Image (tube, rainbow, N blue to C red; front, side, top):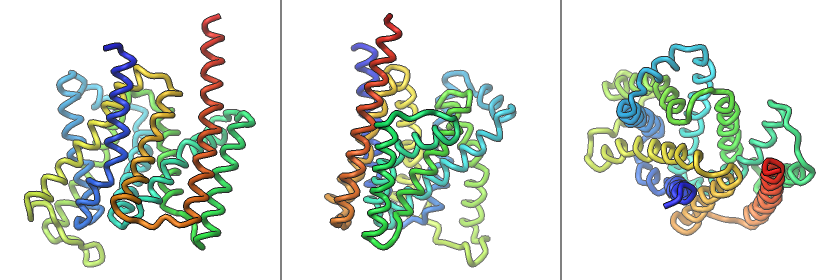
Length: 303
């Protein structure tokens, strides 16, 4: 099998696992969001530690945590933790339509952040796509009478995460391992205090891990469904072009959207329909522009 084909199927596996993850987290709806997030962090670290250990790269992890990039790693850890926590809460609370919209909006937020942070320039088509997405969010806010805060929160936190990752001189597996390593003491501390009943009354929540086998196994498995797709994404990214990666990533929110409407029966109003159509149109415009740029760059590179 050719390397590009291997990358394609690895990316399909990534998008399917991310897109169907609401089913997994809906099964943990009885578990407090913070407990799910804490277990997701800790068990991800365990798996990343095993992978890096087998690769003989644990010293690289220690060096990253002790090096000059620790501030950027910490910021990445905060933004990805906020994104994970908001996503888990959205699924548990029945807002998967909003979460899917957030991940549709994310590429356009990333483009806007590229302009604001890195001084990148947009083509007219890309600027039109961003404007159309902003109009869609505004129309949805007006129609529903409330802003889609979950969608915007997911798109912005993941966008900020992408900004800091661009400035990190670490591979994807190593950088995520460093991020969860920084978060793990907080996660472990919360679980210990909560499990021992030492939390203040205002923060006290039911502690589920260990109370029944199914829930405990699902909590342990949350590390697996976090780490494995990221490892596969790293594998795919080395074998596919950025245009192909970007287009395939739209499979994730599409599957989330289908889970929300077809499996969970979430409401999908006329305003949602109009806003989603506008977002899909914006993504089509942006994708066509990005593919055109990639083809022109390839043509110039080939002389």
